[in-house]
Length: 275
Ligand code: MD3
Ligand code: FE
Image (cartoon, rainbow, N blue to C red; front, side, top):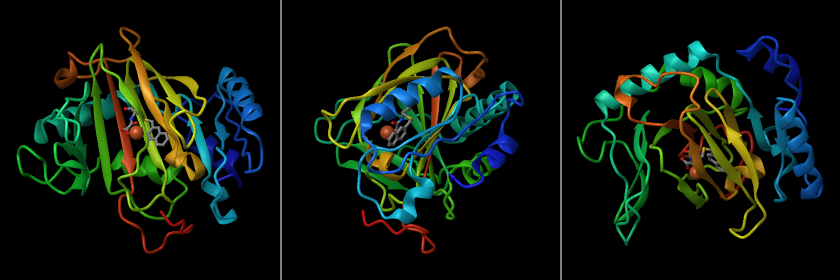
């Protein structure tokens, strides 16, 4: 991902005048200077690549770290995607996930598209091919999401699931790791729509220090390599900050986050990190 990255990302940029730089920091670099650098680059609206300290094969360096594509999607692209989310909700209604064992409801509602969808109920977290309420297959990926994955994931295989989280004014997401996938060599690609949110990402242990960023509508985040298993969450949404209307099916909602995921190991994995 670090090779020829400026040319590639310039071609993909939705905002033609934005200057995007990638800075790849290899393992062995201590965390604090990375944080400081991340903040400086963030302030200048550039793409940030940072890496948390985890031993990975050198082959993984090309998709290591957090890549933050600030304002990747144009306003038109954001509105087109939110209309597609409304179509997905019409076919695969929002459901309320609950915590395993305790049954405590999440404050976000969810749906999915793609061959697999993430669900959580009293029995646990898992990916499944059918909607938990309707029993129907999840709707297919909108082609624009597949194109986004190809452009930013730095991974040969296709995504298999897209989890769509819907936030109301008071919804949040506690710190957690995404580890229900068999293939951690693939990144998670996140797209935000609607109101801005304060997002945190920490280290591989729950108590590790956290960096906080404001995720805005149109921002794309690629969580690859060492950051793939970092603790992260959403502290709060900033109601009334959306630059776009979200569409009729989402009129009462504040923020939408889509995460594209590879679930099963791809036979052609370019990295092959053991989970
Ligand atoms: C950092 N979603 O669905 S997206 C989730 O905005 C989730 O709804 C949040 O966390 C949201 O699991 C945050 C950004 C994100 C996604 C996956 C990550 C950050 C990540 C995986 C590892 C590290
Ligand atoms: Fe997550």
